[in-house]
Every structure is written in structure tokens, then in C-alpha cells.
Length: 304
Image (cartoon, rainbow, N blue to C red):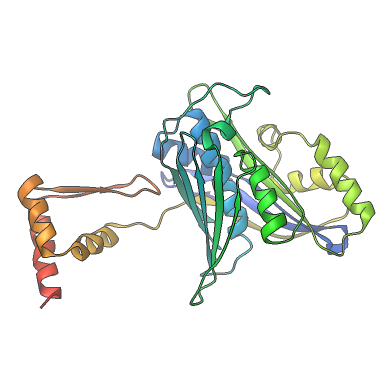
């Protein structure tokens, strides 16, 4: 169990496993508290909460495949009312993210579900893996539906040549709070035989919604075993996941100093103060007049 930003204990976690003698990779996550934290921090309306919750979940699952200090960045650029969706995760289970327009709630789709696809719209999905080398690895694909899960399945197939099942879900209450959230990725390695492939395809067709399974009390390992439906499962690792942003006042001070002495002086003369907001977590950092003056003096020293 981990601590959320407000100090609450979180039961969110990720399980990494294999199926069918190691020919299938499976990752699953329960991210209810993570998605709830994002909803609370950003004031997300239901459709926006579902969209960001799904993206945070899949980004955390991608991060679980990395090693410290590696990171993964996800950027979904659609022409729908949500605008950009950005998320970032590390190998330690920390994930953060935001949407350009958090106040988006559309009528339900034909299936009676939150219409994430319409909120995202058409566009592209970008995945950047920072392995700590000089250059990062970046892949991208067009959005297939905007529903996030289908888009990532398409990404894995066409960018990484891995046929994949990606199931993501966020259950949002009428009062906009998140009731349940989770995700599942099942990926077929080339060694998987046709019988295993056919079995998993049949299971995928009847798999219940992830959010419903989590709401019913299932944990991440339960989700994997549900998808395996009788195939052997070997659990490799279980790890915590949480919404966590590494922003700090010191970082924002450096950003202000980087603006330079003249721009800071203009800011002080015009507004007398400054307030900066972190896009990823909505944390606010206020700088009053004397604090801005101190930053002006520091900027002047650095240019000498």
C-alpha cells in the first residue's frame, strides 16, 4: 500500500505476469485511487475523468516495464473537446497527467457508456520512452477510436509488432467522483501457438468491463487470471502505483529565474506578484513582491 498526495493509504497496484509457459505477457492494474486523485486535483468532469483515468492507467502499465530512472511519456493529440491528454510514469509506480480541458462531459454513447471517443476525437497517439540515453525512443500511430484501449492495441501492433488486448476502464459516479478504475494488457509473443491465440481471442470477446471487475472487488492478479481463463499464470512481480508529481517550489523558482531579470521586473511592476500552476498536478506556487525581488536579484547575479 502507498500514500496518495493527501496522505490517504492507497491499495492501487500493478501485477506483471506471464501466461502459457511464458509465451504471453500480461500486466494488470487497479488504479481507483490514482484516477480519483487526478479527478480531485484537476476538477475533472465525468467524461474527462474517464479519459484521463484510462490514460494514467495504461501509462502506469508501460512504466512498470521500465527500470529506474527510465520514464515513459504519453501524449494524445485529438481534435475533440478534451484537447491534449498528457501523462508521464516512471519505473517506481509514480504516474501523473492532465487534459487540456478538464470540464468535458458529453452525452453517453450508444452503448450507454461515457463517450470518451467523441471527447478525444481524431488525431494521433505518441509514446516516448526515455531510457536515460542521449536520444529517447518515440513511436506514434493515428487514433483508431479515441477510446484509448483500442488505440493502444493498435499502437502495440503497428509500432512494436505485438498483438495485444488492451482493456481500460473508469467508473465515475454521478457526483463526478471515481468509483473504480483499472486496466489490463495481454500481449502475444511470436512463440505463442495458434491454440493459445484462439483461446485468448475467445476470452477477449466475452471479457467483462475492467471497471466492473474492479468494482466487484477484483485485484490485478484476479484480472489476469480472468483473462487467462484456465491458461497457466506465473506472477513475476507486484508493485504499487500512485498519482504523484515531482514538481516543487524550487523547480518553479528556477523557471522564473530562467525568464531573466527584465521579464521578472516587468512582472513585478505590472502584477506585484506571480502564481504558477503545475499542469500535471494543478499545484499552485505563489510568489509575492519580496520573493519576486529576490529572484530578480538572483537572475541578475547569474548573468554577470
